[in-house]
Image 1 (cartoon, helix red, strand yellow):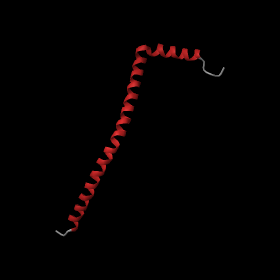
Image 2 (cartoon, rainbow, N blue to C red):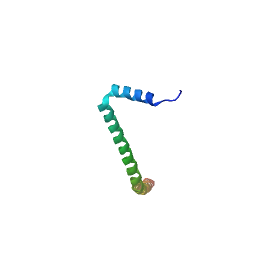
Image 3 (tube, rainbow, N blue to C red):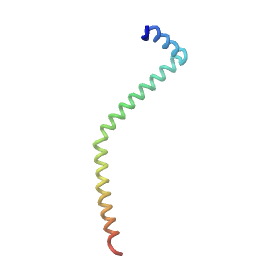
Length: 79
């Protein structure tokens, strides 16, 4: 008696269908499906980009370290 039965689910589904209409519900489900596929695509791109992005991050770090060293050498030398 405390559980949700098939009739309660059908009544809720009918009320939702009447309130939103069939077109609006199918539009929302289409948007939901596009969101899921976009999320999956983003996750696979993130995994694919991870090794490349690490290499790109390391290269500027090395260049920045040499630039900082050169800058400190210039500031240490008397003018």
